[in-house]
Structures are given as C-alpha cells and as structure tokens.
Length: 158
Figure 1 (cartoon, rainbow, N blue to C red):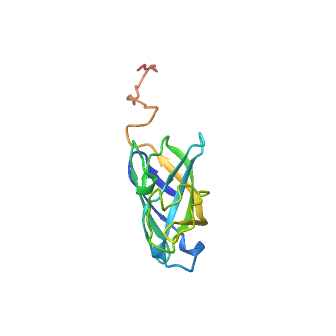
Figure 2 (spheres, rainbow, N blue to C red):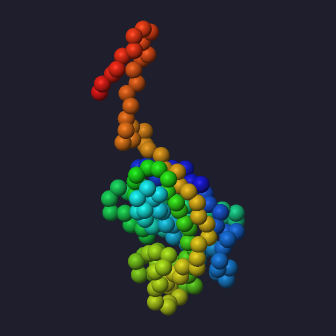
Figure 3 (tube, rainbow, N blue to C red):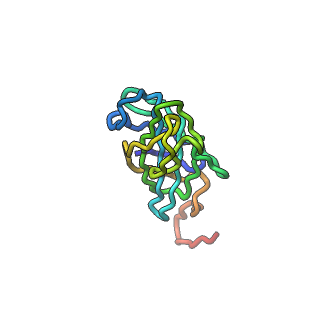
C-alpha cells in the first residue's frame, strides 16, 4: 500500500525484483510503468517514475504536476483523493534506455516497432492500493468547530 497526500510529490517503496520477469538483462535496462486507476470514477493515469532499483525493493518518485503532466518524466496529477489502485509493469530494453514517446510504451498494451532501443512491456510485477488523502485545508467539505456550551444546545450556521 502506498500512503500519499494530494498536491504533493509521492515516494513509494515497492517490491519489484522478487517478481521480475526479464532476468536476461541487468536492472539498468529495466524501468517501471505505473498505472493508477481511480476507484470512484475509473479514471486512469500512467507514469514512468524516477526510480532506483535495489536488491530487495525499488524506490519510485512521482512529481506532482497540476497541468500538462508528462508520463515520461514521472509527473502525476491524481485527484480526487481517496482510494486508487496501482499496477506496476516491467518494461525492458536491450539497447539504450530512453524514456520518451518514441522509445517507451505509453500503456501496458502499447507495442512499439521491433528495435533494441525500444522498450517492451514484459508484464505486471506488483499491484496494490494507493491511499490518497487531502492536503490540509483542501478537502471538499470543511467543518468549523465551535466550543461546546454548558447549557442550552445551539444550532450554528455558516
């Protein structure tokens, strides 16, 4: 599970190496395409995070961007807050790794022309839930607290 806050950068530590699919290349030739699916409205967002693959885990860094998000640069814009599902897909290269529109698949079903410098989606390596909470003061419903009176009950408006 990933815990995050809206309108902020996200850092996730996920187990990907234990489910690695393409063991014929080094981890330097592997990147991960992350698919976020909103539980409420079904909207989908993709991103290639900045990442460091370690022996037992991968740390992924997503940058918050409110406009013009670019899935190839690790940017995400996830709203509304709540429960999101995530799926992490392994993408591998034989030649030079380039995360751009010409050399990296933009979805899990995107197939690029055969070329050593084009990435190939190997399959899903992990999935889970992203619990996205509201940034303080940005919730849709805001409550004003009033001190409790010692006598008669009052109804407050506004």
